[in-house]
Image 1 (cartoon, helix red, strand yellow):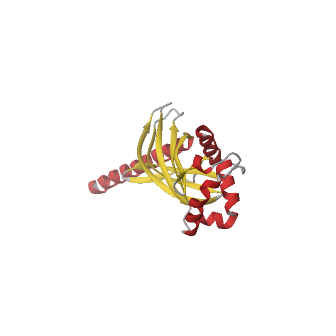
Image 2 (cartoon, one colour):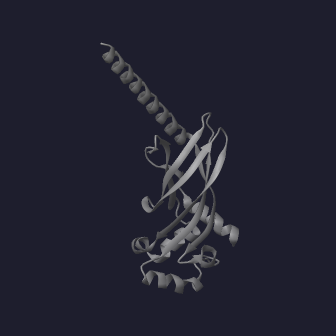
Image 3 (cartoon, rainbow, N blue to C red):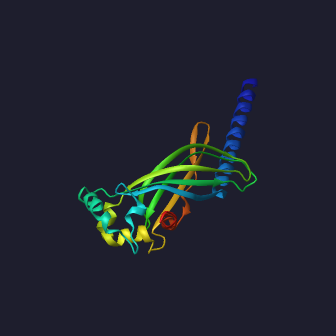
Length: 203
């Protein structure tokens, strides 16, 4: 009888512990969804290895950039590269902890690049932190679909709204395991506006 009572005690303790972990996990995930995610700045933007501002002329694409782009197309590799400085802010009353997050860049709703950042982020109320992200995406397939001139016009002059989008999926680490936020959080549904602003700053 005593053994049964001891077994029952440990069983109840384990159930309460698991219940507490589940509650803690859900609370931390909810906090991640309430944080603010914004693009602080964009650095070192390049297309086909050339700075973005060198590809633009007065009314659009610079003719001097065409040979480099044409060569990239022949290689079926037209890379769009950039460093994105992502600002994470915690406006909630609870501490926000992020161990790792996945991020994707979409072009007209289609995934163009997927990456992951392993960062140990711990933010108290009203604290913020800037996290650097990098990406390199091949635009060749998009050029085949949209056409060369239209694609560069959309990227460099932002003639189309919601052309590029940045989305992230943050996670918390509990018991040595990462638990990801359900679905992706849209950081900037018109990422192209940020590209356009950076171009204007450098022109």
